[in-house]
Image 1: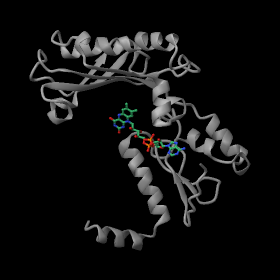
Image 2 (image 1 turned 60 degrees about the vertical axis):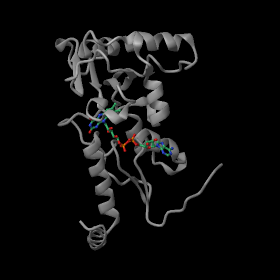
Image 3 (image 1 turned 90 degrees about the vertical axis):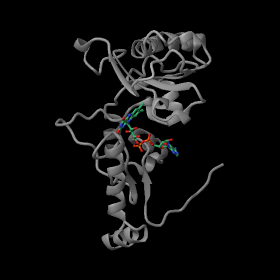
Length: 239
Ligand SMILES: Cc1cc2nc3c(=O)[nH]c(=O)nc-3n(C[C@H](O)[C@H](O)[C@H](O)COP(=O)(O)OP(=O)(O)OC[C@H]3O[C@@H](n4cnc5c(N)ncnc54)[C@H](O)[C@@H]3O)c2cc1C
């Protein structure tokens, strides 16, 4: 059902530049703006592995975060080379049932979308590719957690792919964000050629990452609200 929400001051989008573009009526978008977005290089996507398993046999002094680099010569942005692992139940046992751990492993923005593009998520081809491309994460988890970890005994096993990333995070091609290199380019500003449409988030200055996107939201808020109004709001919330 189509719904209209009317805004008096502005519309602010923190969807990626490609996802924001897809929401705009083409006739409202100047060609140069569209071309700028369509020619911006994208970072690659992700593989994810989410696990739930019994803590028995796992070392009591297991660290929460682990990084496994398979081959330093290939570089940290090579595909299937770096796996980041977090076991948050190490610090917050209430995140899992008593005596269990939860674990998230992922390949950080290094999984090419191309090899997944167009696959039917119910097909055997997709399932086989999932098994093949998740193996690097399983091996990294085995290395980080030691011989007490047994993949066969995991009670929860969920593998996410670039298609998962695209679907559930609603990010074009499951991308990590624009591939704009520090020193070679700058992230776009927050205003757009469409009157009263502003953007924040990881497609805008200062860039990708939680602190950066929070800053971009603050910049947009600053642009829309006067300093006097800021002070009034800060007083109201007691800061
Ligand atoms: C696995 C992983 C690990 C990371 N680790 C770190 C880290 O350790 N430190 C760090 O600083 N950063 C990290 N990042 C990066 C950081 O999470 C992102 O840069 C940041 O969350 C991006 O925020 P955003 O608001 O720009 O975009 P998003 O968080 O993608 O928000 C955009 C929102 O727009 C919504 N949306 C899209 N289309 C529509 C629509 N049509 N209608 C309504 N809503 C829509 C989406 O659902 C989404 O909720 C990590 C990212 C990933 C994927």
